[in-house]
Image (cartoon, rainbow, N blue to C red; front, side, top):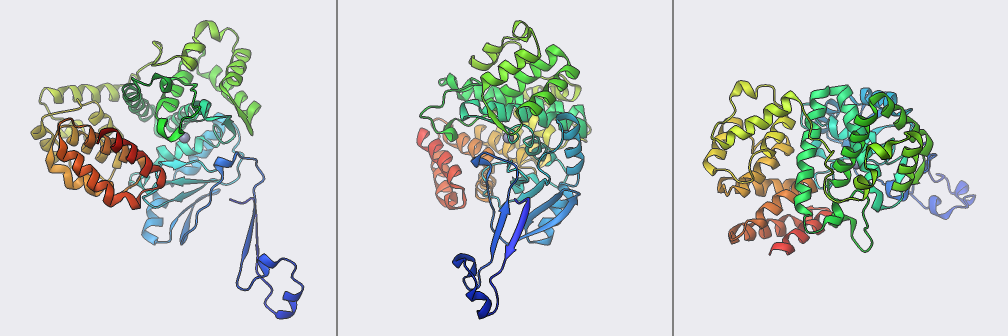
Length: 449
Ligand SMILES: [Zn+2]
């Protein structure tokens, strides 16, 4: 969006129109809008949206835009009321906000991503509106890109971790300041589980477990994963632990100030790191982290009371004990998500139905919880949830949800019925998906059918 905005209407009278020397904007009934963007950005960060759009003011430099339906706009405004606080936290941590406006646009459910960090106006999936302000985490992520990704951009996709690893780190620092250390640690825990799953997914294709990859001849959408996010986060967190937070914060600020509005690669980052943190290469194996496969031995699973309690409750479920209501009284989506992700891939179907009967997870308004539960229901061959799975696959097009659900359906070995079901649902839902999401689902189906 614009730093300067000019709207020109064609002259009304025939006389004035004679003087018009621009056939395009002088044509009858046309309005030409010109936008000027003062800050340089790489082309992938340019986007525009068309629709019947309304807005609400949520902060001194933030409006939330969405479909012009008052209930949608009000819910969005409530969800994102804390945005200005997060921008200020970001400025304290990483330096001034360079883009003037930080507006949010809530897109239709077919949007294939959680968010896209278009400078000045972030695009968001409507699934982040959960009614409890927990969508703040996705906003924190896209906001963090204002410094890491948008201000400093990866030169090519081989260095994508410079965008997403830094942003995941920055996001969690913002979340820690705004929502507290426990929530930040929970997010690190969820990320850690995700990273473990990617190691499994790429076990026959370990090139894509590296931070610095070689994507020549590869479609980036085919190898998109949590690796650049979570392994990148782990790498930066490892450096932070080595040199201490104050020194790392100082380093980050200097890094951002040095490379802002530039595109860089892994070598440039490493050279800058070595120059500014002398001797770091003797303490942290930078080559293993950036060029090695798998997870380095000095990566760390987070430690926190809530996190270990959730993991131990999940372990107890394996022994047949369901969490008591007092144990989950203050759980929100993230706690449930982590709990479900720590259960075995396949559990007793009757036990799963009992858990759902008590806590209504399949119908959660929080898609992270709902999808984690449905995925488990599929892998546990709990048929009761087919209609909920179908409904979910037809109402959202976010790849984060499509990928695990379709994968779970088609991976069930010797279970032809699930595959037929997956194929039918996809053929009916296909037109409502974004082309990138259509491609991803097609490749999941073709691998297994
Ligand atoms: Zn990102």
